[in-house]
Image (cartoon, rainbow over all chains, first blue to last red; front, side, top):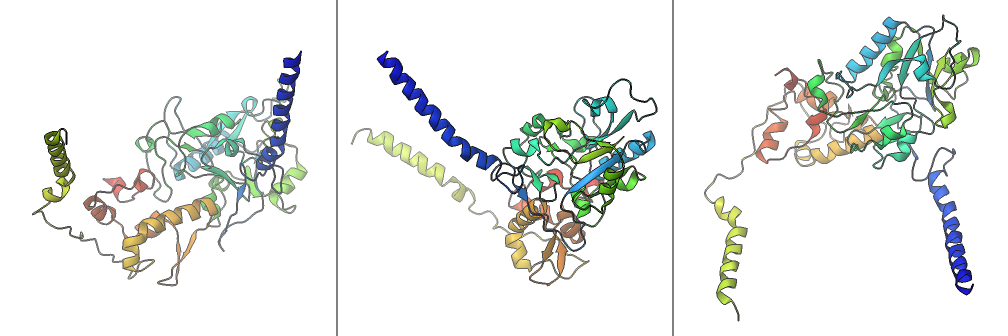
Length: 264
Length: 128
């Protein structure tokens, strides 16, 4: 009996110590201005936008699935992949920044088999630039990080290819370079770097084009099916569309707060 | 002293081995700075020649971090007081068109191999 009491007290002391650590871990994980921001793990990088660049406090995209045709989607994917030097590799090791996917695969929770036949069968999928990005939290080198305007960026220089982000991303938005991508590139755009073997890549909401004052390339060629703008500005086109039409997001119950909205 | 001979032989081998690079190079030509291709498009670089020669690698690293991580794309030159884009392909390579006649000349001579070109595209080199 005596030893049991002694052991119980020991365990109780350790348990109390464990709970004592909790406020500190909570502070590090989520103690920014927003609950999604943390001191250590998911802090956001300020953007020092130049005079010509497009600015927003929260970039977001609205995709009108009723306006997307096969031809538009092909054009969008082709444009994005050609200007960003994304290669086409046959088989399981292909890379993609934006791609066409079946509605059932995009919206696992929201659709059922009795949807109207006339509705869109497929739509475009891309990085959702989540407000609470799991990829950023798990990246051990901060190679992927979030900017203040919400864009989840990749720093290819810093990526060590551990692929934690790919495991973290519930949308499959990230691709890994299993081989030198240059061998599979038909034409390279010299103004944008290619990647090297062993790094992860994904859509960056055309951050390099926003800095030059241009809209993302997909939006430009989408013939109005894709709209890009500031989610925090009530007068922006995205906000007006979201106020007018019914919209859904991909797997919102996961808590990632995706910022790509689909009009259905 | 025990094993005097063994120690002396060992020391001699060690000294010869350590100084091998010095006496191996006796008589060979001294380092000569390679001739670089002259730039026709612009009169001056973003900074002075001496600064660029000694600091370009540090500067490119700074540019890289500022552009990718902070979104700062503009470089205010202290030499020319002009604004340049912080970009290897859009700024540096616009004047120094040939990587093989500019970058590679010195890098090959001093035997360094920066990995810039694993990802960044050399527009002229792609065609070969």
